[in-house]
Amino acid sequence: MTRFITFLVLTVVLCGTGCLHAADRPNVVWLVSEDNSVHYLQHFDEHGASTPRIEELADHGLTFDHAFSNAPVCSVARTTLATGCYGPRIGTQYHRRSVSVPLPDGMKMFPEYLRNAGYYTANNNKTDYNAVSGKNVWDESSRKASWRKRKDGQPFFYMQSFPICHESSLHFSAKVMASEKTKTDPDSVFVAPYHPDTPTFRYTNARYRDRIMQMDRQIGSVVDALTEDGLLEDTFIFYFGDHGGVLPRGKGYACEAGLHVPLVVRVPAKWKHLAAAELGSRRKGFVSFIDFGPTTLNLAGVKVPEQMDGRPFLGSGVSQKEVEIRDEAFGYADRFDEKYDLVRTLRKGKFDYVRNYQPFNFDGLQNNYRYRMLAYTEWRKLYQEGKLNAQRSQFFEARPAEQLFDVEADPHEVNNLATDPAYAEVLQDMRNRLTARVKELPDLSFYPESHLVDAAFDNPVEFGRANTAAIGRMVDIANLQLLPYAEAEGELKKVLGGLNRWEIYWALVTCSSFGEQATTLAPLAEKFADQNLHVLVKVRAAEFLGLIGKRDPQADILSALRKTSSGVEAGLMLNSLVLLKDAEPGYEFDVSEDLFRSDVAKNDTVKRRLEYLTGKPFRKPKK
Image (cartoon, helix red, strand yellow):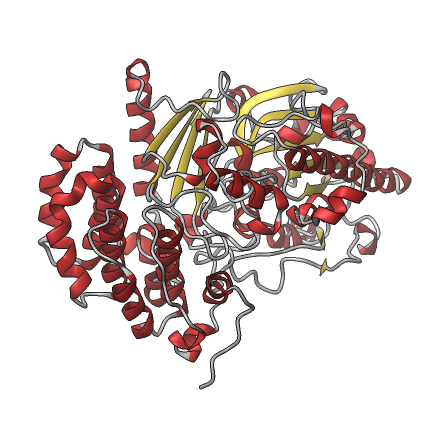
């Protein structure tokens, strides 16, 4: 009897870890298209392209009408998927990463938990993580990876990315546009109201819809392979976009076009009980990328780690009635290549609240990779020539500190309701909710990235815990932007008269947000432009004074750039320099390759900015 009990215990333990067969637990496949929001698929938007193979998946599964990437760019979004954690909480919010940060103590990327439970994990082939992944996430991650290399009967998790609709597919030349016809008729496509309706934008729209249709066929090929292998009815198939995009004001921007992604989950007949909803139905509950890993673990019967921020929306113990009433999604946008920003969003029901913490940092600020696209360069040229209406000009002008959109009435988010008295209660509620979110995380981005590299990225979560109160104080200073200037002025004076450099930093950012209204604080700002409290404080002071036309910022910013020994720090300062060069009133900067120390010049952000500012590929300066 003792031996029999021991045998039973060992059997339970092993079957809970490594001795699983496909009959025991379902397979899960993720098919991920790059850089497309819901707006490009007819299954989600009447103006989108036809995707019959994805629609076949929907016929035998569930369509999620409110699925969101938490970030609008690939490395941040994919790290969110892999970790189930909000990027600004764990230090993975910057694209491209300056350093890879460790995962929270005791936590792994979710496929590793599947491997430990006996699953075969394969990725074909993009990773693009901002965190240290570890060596045990994938059995194989390569362009040849497949579920077919698993042991006989072993359940599997397989992820495949489809780059055919990546942003780079729209980096065509004028010659190509003139010579290559699209299958989609450019005259028939929908042009978003914030875009100029030109032949370039129509051709770009048509070309991208062609790519979506090609992607759909590629998705179908993987489904066919699963069918041929007799695995279709043992496998959950998730199809989704890795974030939004990809025409201008899509990828990289924390708005509907950048965050709202297509999601369809095909449910195998054998495992229908794990998705207790009518197959072929459309689900209205909100899900976001923090939830995808926990959902996959739950489908596999693996416990979801407590450190993850997400919640399962399928699997054992999940009430579909509860999922249907979920109505919130949190979004974030920070540095995207060399372009810095700090935007947080909260979508709740039909309303989308956008908090621009640096509203003077206009959306269309130079980003080298973006402006490889003809549509981007043409849009900017038309703006500079004064040929755009108010809606189409918004991209190149300072933003309000907060925006509120009714996405049902205004799906392309061009009519800001934040100043409409009829929406005052909604605005206040959304403002309070988002402020609570960033404080509770706590949101590490209220410290400059360079400070996080120096002080936080060895253990970002612990740094956040230790500095929760300080981050909350910086959030409060930033929120002075939301008051009438007469009410904010006294508190700003108090902060500028203090000694805390990061509070002073945020007070200066807030002064820039008020613009000329804050001219009364210019004398205080001049002291910081003259002093050396910190090079970033000096640059923020120069930025404010330059934006209001009180002082030429060139000498102050170039002095700070010469002094810094941090490439990450220099990248943030160069963002301010480019802003002051390209925005009103406009300043000339004499930036040469030998301005920087050699170690600073190695930074990718610095290289990209110098390519733009000097008009030539960057060469490393001689030591």
